[in-house]
Image (cartoon, rainbow, N blue to C red; front, top):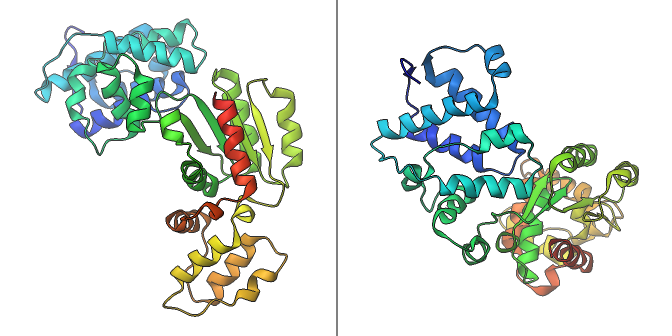
Length: 329
């Protein structure tokens, strides 16, 4: 890298970059994104165009990225350790999660001085960065994952349609005695039944881990799209009734609403005698009680804060948790 000129990354930029490199995402995609960003914004000379980067050999690209990152660490007063055992652990982990061809191995087989970066990781850091720090010193990272609820290393993936499932499934699982973070179960919200199919198709191309797919009752056509690609390590659960909100016990929903509406008005119990889906009823409750617009993600958080009793877990939710446990084992 002789005669090159670098604009060092700030501490915040370094944290963002390493965070992105260690998230759960396709290995090639995340490394290229981070490396392209670094070379575009922090390499002053020589200056590469986007087309240059796209055509560049992955080994050369990696060399430039590691040089800029390590130069930035030194500029921040970090002492480079030049110990790359952690890099090899990351390479081994990514290979257990995703299919990695020889080009992707070039991205992973780098000399980024992660050990010099570790002091920037604290208790407020994302779980993937806490895992990175633990990985540097732990012989059995799965034991550390269970002790510290790190989620990483990830053991299986759950794809759900929306944010309600993403928020509530881990909480219900805890109440059933199964902590997703302790067992490496990672939940992804796809953003709709059609997006579930799209996301599954993307993941199944490269992911080695088992996938559990949760679909609403009306997603039978989407299930048929998934079936031809379904691996024997994967499983689909089609809800027996409506949407995930319809699985929530009525007492839990009422208790949550009564808490939220305590200073607004008394909730009429007969509203829930309707055969309408719970989400539609909730929209009406929020509208007629002068509350803000009903938003599933916000309501899911309200529900999460009001889960107290064993009866708050419906039979089908308990069944889903049991199925996830079987897939993860």
